[in-house]
Image (tube, rainbow, N blue to C red; front, side, top):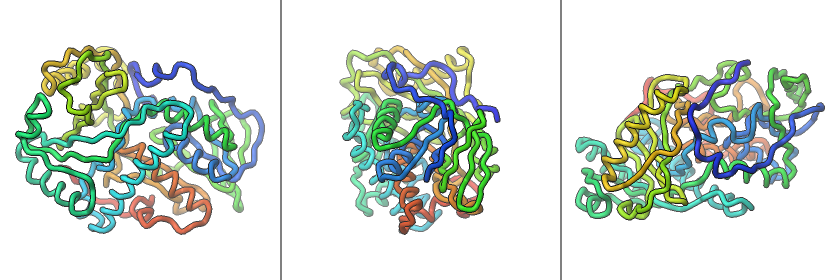
Amino acid sequence: MTTKTLYGGRLYWPDTLPDYTRYPSLAENKTVRVAVVGGGMSGVLCAHALAAAGIDTLLAERGEIAGGSSAANTGLLQFSNDIMLIDLMEQVGPGSAVDFYRACRGAVEQLEQLAARLRLDVGFRRTSSLYYASEEQDVPKLHREFEALFHNGFDVEFWEAERIAAHFPFRKAGAIVTHGDAEINPFRFVHGLADQAVRHGLAVYEHTGITSHVPGDGVHRLTTDTGVVIEAEHVVYAIGYEPEELRGNLIKAELHRSFALVTEPVANLGGWHKQWMMWETKRPYLYLRTTPDGRVIIGGLDEDIEAPALGAREIGRHTVRLMQELSALFPGLAAQPAYEWSATFGESRDGLPFIGPDPAMPGVYYCLGYGGNGTVYSMLASRLLLDMIRGEEPDPIAALIRLDRPSPARRLHA
């Protein structure tokens, strides 16, 4: 198998943790109850939950922990999804849609609890999000979304143009303010979780790629690229956008590429109300946040190309466009780009993640957090898969995100 290149350019988050734990490669055969394949956000969250519950768990990562898409994650944690609540209601029914949004809100709270228990400062900060109308014609739908959120108990406000202009140096026709969101340093978070999970008994192996998977009678036999064998009762695949041979093309994500940059520290962010996160109704959307040391992160400009841009010229061209978008919103901001990159990301047809058991292979599970809410979905997965492996009754939302669910013909957009 060949490894996909998941990003190009210079990433910011690894520079915030230059000294992190390295783990050995697997050198001898192992027998465990659960083998987790993939050492990014999804895999480490799942392995952490299993190990913390006292389940004998091994994690195998073909590269380094947090070395793939997690290092390019921009760390926005929101209960709102790429698919609006009102669209999800139409897709799966009002009750199920609200349950899913509530589960996402709960996942943000669970991430906060995990972050608070880590020895490493992972930059977790509670904040709010400004979800603004990209065009005036988006306002009626934005109003309907606000009403659906508000009447179902979510902490939201609707801001008219005058109120937006009074708090920000730009004017938009309308916006939903969602309270209860958060931001995080994903690279430090994944490493902090892995370190803690090891103290709970998790065995972590880097540079350990899985090249074959043979199911048996209640035992799965995984063989590594060096010929070492792992036998496990259960296997969790959290390999994101890596090669799909092991999954037999069971799930086919729509892969795109996106662009992001992080500025040098900015002397004055005074015009940025409470440094709220921001995103917009247009698809693909622009999103913004700040960092604890006063930098700005801005991303978007998604393209229907699977491979990330790798050349400095191509990435630089998109950096110019992102800086123009930043200047349009904050004309007085004296910001200079310091880090710039392009990364692959995946979307499912219906905008929801794929989490749950393989319908054709007992004892095999998937945590595929496609979409802009990947970290929140991974948190959901860690709890759902733990319950499934322990034989407990799964949460009702498990039916919404199962691998063999019906798929709509097209995505619903704002």
